View 1 (cartoon, chains in turn brown, purple):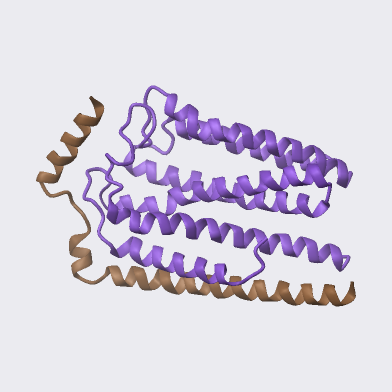
View 2 (cartoon, rainbow over the protein chains, first blue to last red):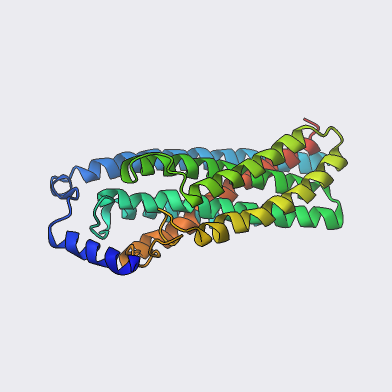
Length: 66
Length: 221
């Protein structure tokens, strides 16, 4: 029953436009958001990769000692 | 654990795709959720990641009990630490999302309450570890507790919320399942890579912590 009601509601609302960020996307501003996130994400990955490398060097050092 | 590098490149590629695709690819137009439906790509993988990490942590705890190697204890605790991080982030992000979609950050929804209990059980794991000085004893007792915690995690997250009368979370209680909420084929294209990518990131972070612990022990730091 809940299922039916929900499907009905969803299609009922869908009939009238559901507000989405359409204008924002059309203006191309979404690419600003994507760009900023990509910069942060790539920066974070570089940091993580370098940390990984540093540990690898320590492991090599430890293996030589042991 | 995985010694090769390819899966780290896979993690980065998947997450880059998830952030770009998650923001740009089309999603179903649903009332109340509107554009926030995209949060699904980030909030839900936190929980999947947490479960994957806790599963690995539990396996390591069992391994410790059968072999009594301290390395397994290091694996177990570090995996659980990253798991709890994912759980906390999943909880906070969920509350933030709920504030704008369900009207309040905490609706005492069955799944919210049960996941809070599950997190508290895992918090106790770290309290327990902190209270035991002897290394072997700490490893053994916390391994047993870890298995117990994992055994309660499954009913708390997967069974009890589904038995509840009503729930705001899709797929629980009287609510329609994910399919009725249109986790349509387009959303799956981002959602599945997101789950894999975030979980892999969790394992990557855990391996860094594990390797750090092992190497600092070797170097006597």
